[in-house]
Length: 335
Image (cartoon, rainbow, N blue to C red; front, side, top):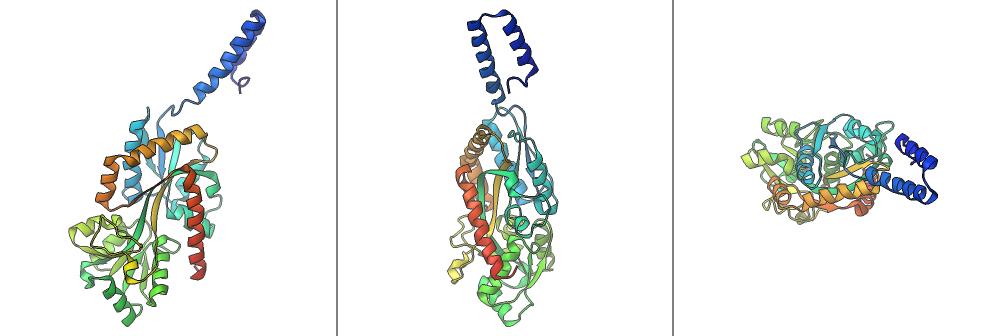
């Protein structure tokens, strides 16, 4: 590394010509030691955060909020760039190809970890090209019904689907997504059949369909539907979890009805593979401090998102386990 730097090469030439052995050795050693110290200084410029979804969705909002807090611990800023397309692969392939120096990071969601790897949907996309260093949220999916649907509880929704198979309209993201898998697993667990309607993109389309009466119910996180829930235009009837969400005490977990079904979304932060350990450590520390702040904890509670921290030592093991469990469920349903 020393010989590749032109300035250091010239310095070494001058030292060889005019310095004594002792002076030469000391000067060269000092120069060699000084170069890595400068190169290890991180960050040296603003950090680019790639969010592989359009602006305005839940992943975008959470990424922006925690990054705004994380940059307070750094000498530079963190700016968000939305690069949607190919079920998150467009943005994440740009992340994978970025210089692995810590100045470009990105967001992994369910689709990045499950949908794309499961179907080998995009040539060249691979989690092996990325280095996850933190998980900041883990929120359960939920079933939300429209005010116009006439349903006011989970039991009413399931009973209607049993009595009239294929008539209860429920909106989810496309096949391969977490909500799509959730509705198929729910059908299998309860012995019902829904009229499943897929909506590409974020949950905004499903919220609009609920408001218009196009669908009776939808599956996504409660946080994604916070606007229409707070307005009273929709009602959360169950969360696909085994524990109560404190932000929504009136929405019961599905475990209360004797059904074992846990699905949901998450936000994982990652850098390109081979990013230096010191840069990863700095990023992890900054985001962990942001995560622990009262401002972030209060904010996620208000919007109905469940915080769930895992650091760089745990997050990769969690991803492997999550993939294994989810792929097994897909195999059972032939999805």
